[in-house]
Length: 189
Image (cartoon, rainbow, N blue to C red; front, side, top):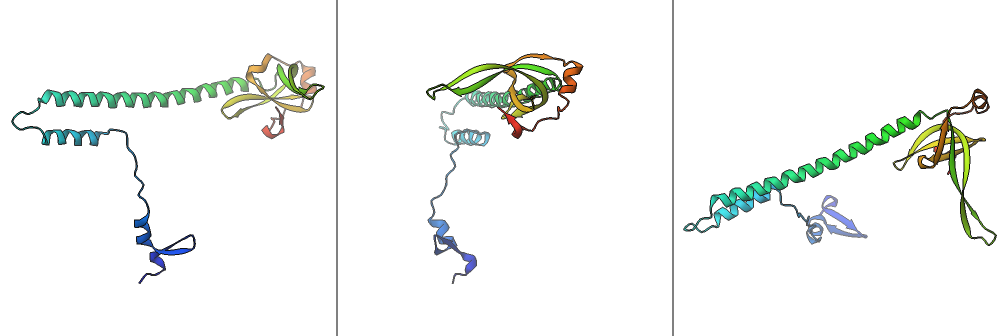
């Protein structure tokens, strides 16, 4: 007799757990890789099924083993190079962020693309030169940008749009005294 521990309810119908599990299609995991174990199993099978009166030369087995080892080593090298590439990209981003951080408190000129509509309502865009004070550095989706304040408004500026970086004069520094780092949500893009 089935109790509640041996049953499963699916779509409001209660089944015996073992019978339900047996009726479900089995998931088979496809393995396209020939690993070490599979290679050794194949080699043993070849040895077991060879003609005892006309055995295969041992050098062919050694050649197969050498080819398999070479392939495995090349695969390991490729995986290591992929990992190394990720490390180098992270280092590049870190160095760039460090360099951009040195711009905080400096003035910059950049080109901002303004999207508008013409008289008929068609979208147009044009470049506009702007100047402001760098207040921070941010990385959004892996792309570093700087945060800039201009006339109380905050902008996120792509580093490719920066035209000029300069030290502020004492008068400009006191006029722009509020250079607290901007939060990404406050930024005009």
